[in-house]
Image 1 (tube, one colour):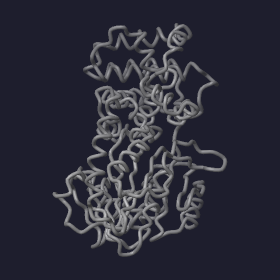
Image 2 (cartoon, helix red, strand yellow):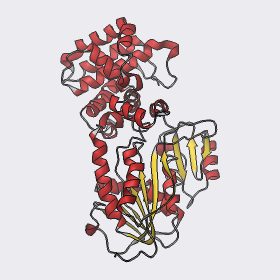
Image 3 (cartoon, helix red, strand yellow):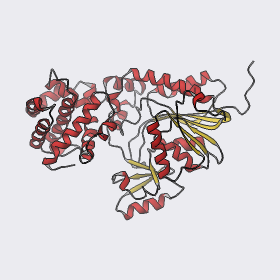
Image 4 (tube, helix red, strand yellow):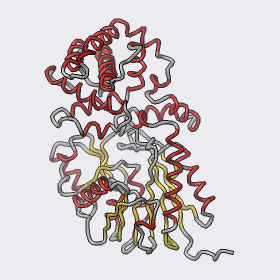
Length: 446
């Protein structure tokens, strides 16, 4: 990725603003959406790269600026510039996916970025001094952070410790997968296309693709989503291969009443509707995100009279349930999202150790509530995009101890993140699946 030098300072500044928002505890996706459209694609590429190396960048920044000013944009610019300058100094040894700029250009344009932002103007000398010192002392500085787990693995130290404890034979591999650039995986909409049709359309447009799973397709030469063949026609949705397992596990049949309890952004709801003519209630506590569900279903040609969009709290059925039990309930409950870090690299830096306990309590409230709306003979599918056992297997065992009438059915359990390989062009994110059924005729309480 190379840009003209005159544009680089603007892109650096936009990326630094977004990274500064992450430093302040806000989502990178939301932060990037607030940047100017003309610099957003370049800023996104730089910010995503930086987030995958943020432990390393933060450790260097701490060595080079002992008393950093409390300016999050400055922290973002310094961290980003150090990441990119390190890449520039690696020469031919750098990663093929890394941004490619000369060291001189980076220093010059980083200082220009500081000079063009009023809040950064007092620190342009600091930016210049930090980057030039890194150029002079790189080897010494790298040696000083060599024993820092956060710098080495680019995850918070508590996260590294948790994976080391929970996955003693796999933790390093999991961290490596998190830091890899994920493929673009699609799910074909069988209501209006076949995988063969889509692959041919891609080939006609000069795009290579490969089949994955039952209905998946990996785009080997990614482009902006809306520019890909079939987007406007609703031929496909963007969905990770791991997430594509959810709807088939519920095995929807025509006429079934189905609840997607935490539906946004709508990928799993759409998949359920693609598989059978069901009566679907898509529920989400966030009204704006629920609007996105409606937009996605409309693009796919799946919005019809048997689809209800309801903005409400899944943990409070009295506010939204009409008293008619559901044959199938998809409980894709809130979690730390520790399984989708390769797609959202800011997640690891936004999470805190206490977040796990918070989401566990929230999940239990939702699961308790949703079990009450499952019909006799019906199913409830617990899904999390997490690899922390507290949000997965431990939660499933709690559910069975809480609801002794529930029967646990076959499901994948913990699905760990996996990088693409020769036999699997997609790989997948990390998910947990547990499927429960309510007996068709429950014994009366004693």
